Length: 161
Image (cartoon, rainbow, N blue to C red; front, side, top):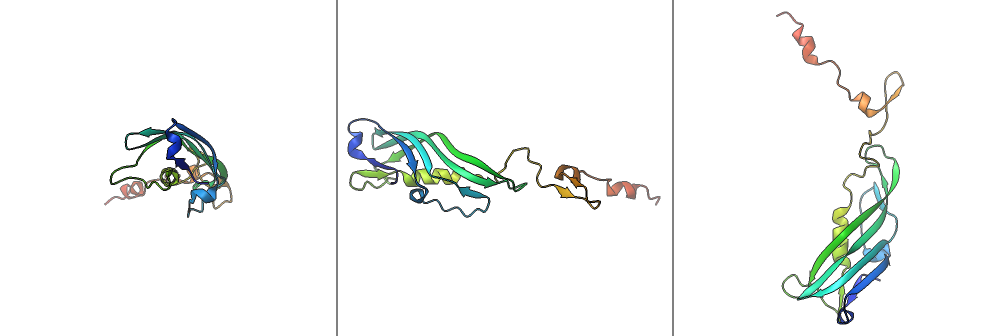
């Protein structure tokens, strides 16, 4: 069941909705090898009627299974939209269609979720990346391998021209 608001229920006051929207209903199509949506969208929001529109405020959480883009370690994460709010216009050029006295909030929520997806998922902001193997066969972290060696200019400065 999509996130459908019945306009007639709003006549009695604000509507509070909570539950889990199945992934199939959310229709998120992610083409990222490092991110997999692990479950349905948990939601808890309130809808208020406003002049010419709806005000929706709440929290949305989507579980993710990610692979770190630096070290390729798998980890679990949650994409969270906390203190999320949106004004849905019912009149004017940007009006959302009202079909049989209902409004579908799913497209608006889907858009904000897609904008919040991580570009480069990291298991930890301080992740050093994959371990590097030196010629001697000793493992070192990427930090040690990337240390600058002697400057090529220092050798040129030794020349007596």
